[in-house]
Image (cartoon, rainbow, N blue to C red; front, top):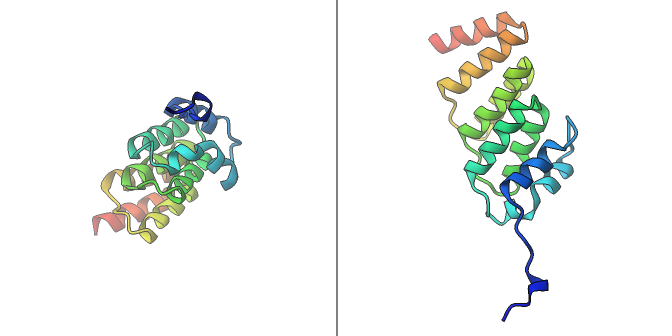
Length: 145
């Protein structure tokens, strides 16, 4: 028989999200790893939960935190795919931070994650919102060729 005192409750996906939303705008890696908790490392939450956390951070206009969570989830062993990068790039697009979007696009390519039209569109959107129209035009030209 298992003693109740030895059972540790599992944090809900919502409580993990609340910890992530409480982070500083530019959180440290250690702070993000602590907010994710051991449940993420143990594989209790899958890619869908990570995507929802990234989308919520993007909607809260927290691009730096979104990128930090993306990287920390990868460190914790979560599958990081184009949907995750898309959510993070969208966070930078919402903020008009074209440089951050380009950094994540480069990171995707370095990590051999397939870049798709939606991600390129979000990156172009970041350029437009960040008033770097030349970068948007250059990217559009590269896509067309």
